[in-house]
Image (tube, rainbow, N blue to C red; front, side, top):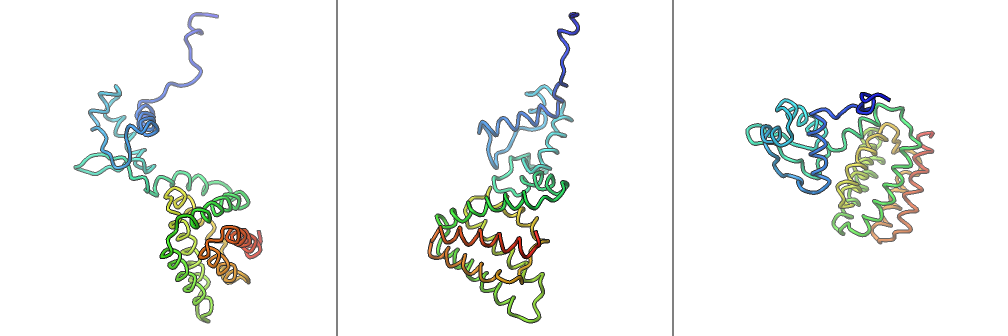
Length: 231
């Protein structure tokens, strides 16, 4: 083997842009920077990482698109808040460009909803459960009106589930659940037989803080969705 072969590398070296992105990522992992904190200027980062200002600027554009940083013109660049929904856009778009595998999505949704039910019973306030009750009443009222459209009923159904995520008091769970539910929106049929009844059953279980009954209801809800959507 020649000396040249000994010093060759199989993988490409990271680009200057990748160096900046990876450094920000590592600092976040190590918690040396956190949400809403300002990061050094382009020139300061370029000097510290020994890259060009253009590479820093390109890295910031990428991180901004991913929702990692927020560029405030005339003020500086900040690490985004932990609740920034844009953080989940890359995952959402990755799912959108793939073939829609509802079986896999259903499994994810079921795992999330089982966890959300547990969090709701532990963390949701009585006032928040009453907001869910009012939303359910709004849903049932829409279903009973002769002139209500499927779109209107489905929107209220989605609102109920989004509130479930919100009242779990876990922003990561809430954001993931929100876009999973959005993916299911084309398949929702709120006027299908059994839908209002299972929502009512779930609501009663939540209000009584009966975790076993609530879990049973949410699993039953899954079966009704499968039946209504023909999956």
